[in-house]
Image (tube, rainbow, N blue to C red; front, side, top):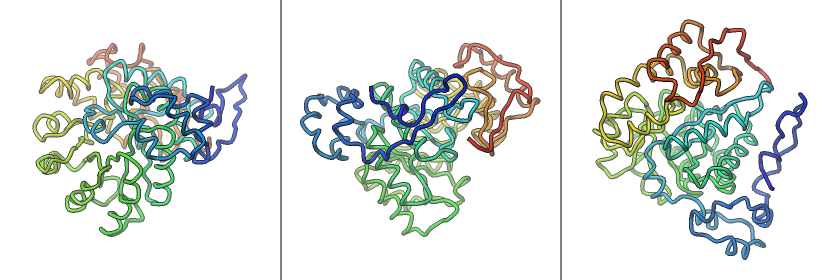
Length: 376
């Protein structure tokens, strides 16, 4: 059975990690894909394998993929999207077995979509081979159960275009795109950047000035929203901004967990793209899907605050290691919370209830239990 994961690397065998070169995904032919039944999820979109086989001699086109993945409207109906954690083996390579367990727990708990390789999933620390492999792996195994949203954004338009074309080619439903950071550009440059990637498929535009140091203004967003592939905005500039957009008929997800409840029920957001749902997915699903619940919001706020005590994803990585859902392995520059913060987090989990997490135990980890890697 064809697997992008097997092309990229194999699981560790007898302590030796075997690495193979991943082929350029854009060069993988339609015939290879069909023969491998890679796109078995096609029945979800009402596309028969026979019709795909009839086009097997042709280069795989975006138009063909659009028949098999989510529409803009389907993306816009997805309320709870988790920015999923990427766990690692001791070698620093991606731990697909642990990743799959996390994803399956998300599905079981009612999460509607995943952002793969986002800031939370440390896409910024991945090679593009790793990044596209993980998108392909997720789409192959779970694309018929939730929306797979690949973080294929970059401050380089060339990289963003290339990654997006590959991401849609391997089956992602939508792309998440940030505006160019560090090497910032002008208003015209931002619009040109997004227009270059929007043509590939459904796209969520991500506005997080705290990370990019450049706000995507409402003026720019309103222009981008005219594009047929514009699915909506992940907005981190507060609920007043979200309310402005939703009043204009633009779909928004809150990018701030602590504001998500009020964004959903007071500002008109469709939902949230969440970090906290890695830890308490079912409770976050209830918070976003089941109607206003200030009591549940207030119950979860301390955990949300704890997760962001230091820059994300440090808190999440620490907590999932404590829950024994991921090896305590950090790719630098991220370093685990100190012992005092870990004790606070453990107390919060006990208060919420371990049964609401993907873990079955709460480990009392010491600093010496953690590994930080500068090479992988």
